[in-house]
Length: 268
Length: 275
Image (tube, rainbow over all chains, first blue to last red):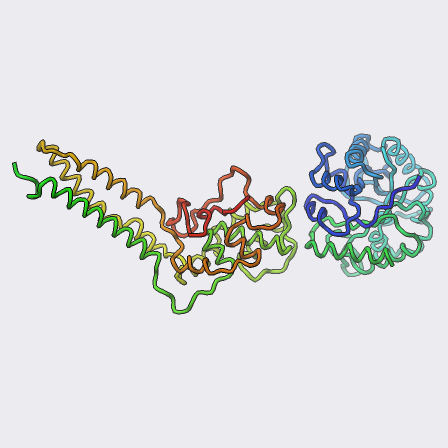
């Protein structure tokens, strides 16, 4: 079964709720599940749903790559939010966020070994059983790369899709960050992915500090990120592309311009 | 038994009434004069923030700044009424700069901004400048007109009270004097309680001559009720039933009770116009 076409959207945040409702060219939104209560839903989300705008529930704390089993309460919350907003799908990251009862507060990269993949697959399957809608998984911007990796990131995700039937959420800003900071090749990554399983795409801004790129979600989307989006779009027509902005929100006109720039790349 | 001061009762009543009328006239003349200060050398030039101050006091001025920043996209308001700045650029008006600095990354609402900014230097500077321009009464003139001018009226009342006391002591008829006394005390108290309009006649003329084209000017003149976007208007307005922000800084207390500070003002410093 396929997923719906989402179009171009923006991350819904309470700080910009009214802006998101009013921005032109918002075909869908994504809500951070950990930040909202499913009952009652924020008024803004009810307004958007009333207009028929699809809302995707996005999670950041399931720690699907962690060695410990997934916390069923976190999965239940994501499921409740998904049902409350009538989400066509939910999404999470290929990462772990803690271990041994400690929370890192960051999305940490997995060792790309077969053993780590087995753990990830086990957790993803467990989460899928309790989720009411399909799950898409996202590549992260890694702070480091574990040694002795057995698979490239693209192959790692491809095998994950094959074994769990999950969908892909490709973050092109994270691809750019990894290319800058770790020397990875976005083109090779995209070549290795089963792009027919692409659910949607994340685009975000960041800032360069010397040789390093910081994926802040608090700066404008740089041209390099849009170039990676263009590279992706040359391979597949993405069902959805979403602009993520989490801080230092610019004026409405700037957000509208970023959405327009994304739409221009997608429509090329 | 002779009459006090060799004045008959009926003659005293007439003199007392004349004295009260003169006392009232002095008060009214002082108030009239306080609102007509000497004309400045150059005709005053006012901007939208000045108009807001003239029309509604410091609250109106701050609310106008907030509404204008929101309208032009430099401030954002969300559904919870929380404001956040969208720009680091420093606006040209010091009050706008102050509002943006106070709001910062967000978390505060319009009411908190008003409370934080009504006593600012930007407000004081505007008040002083408008006073110097003859558009607002000076605090000293307002104080004189409100508190010193009625002293003559109170002196007449004191004379009447003495006469009444002597007449009672001596068993004389005091038919109408108590009524006149009570009436004149009520008049004197009412005159002192009534705040002086801070807006001068020249200030009124400025407001009357304004072309209210553009939302900026309309909000300055009429308050938040002139915000064209109903959602924004609702989110910026004070909560229903909530008392308006403190208004003690509107001038010098001449407007302190909030009755009215100008022909166009919905209320002194009420921030007026909230929906």
